Length: 157
Image (cartoon, rainbow, N blue to C red; front, side, top):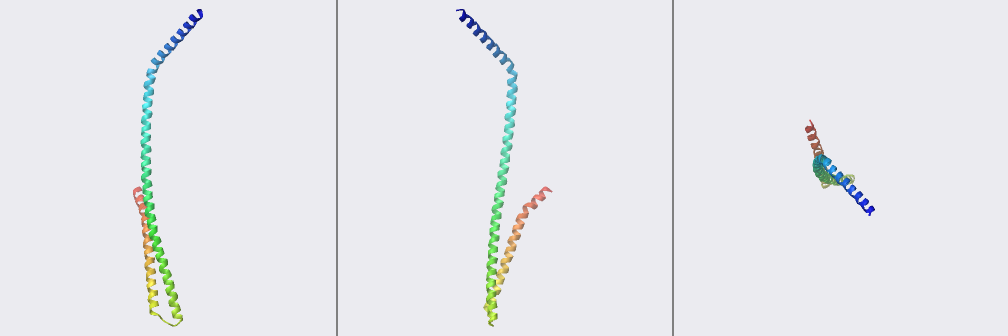
């Protein structure tokens, strides 16, 4: 029975120490809790600000990506038009080459064919028109490429 009394006394002493520790912890942590809560609020505010910055950066990146895609699509369309004009020049030059070859053959045979001369002149005119169209397309491509650069330079100045 004395062992039970001794164990009960030890348990009671331990419980008193735990209760005293809890009281002391509660009394000391009152100020710490306010400081920790303030630190938590500060961190939440900083996190919200960083999240807003990230959102703005993502929005700016998305806008720039859309601008780049639009520019790329416009450049692709412009290059397709230029390619079409180059194909037209090649075709006109092939016709001119064939007409001139037929004209040379007719002149070598001593037969001056007026329709061959007309055909050669028409092919030459078409080649000149096609070359001019290519020049216009290239000039427009250069202007379209330089316009944003000039606007950026004027904005920087």
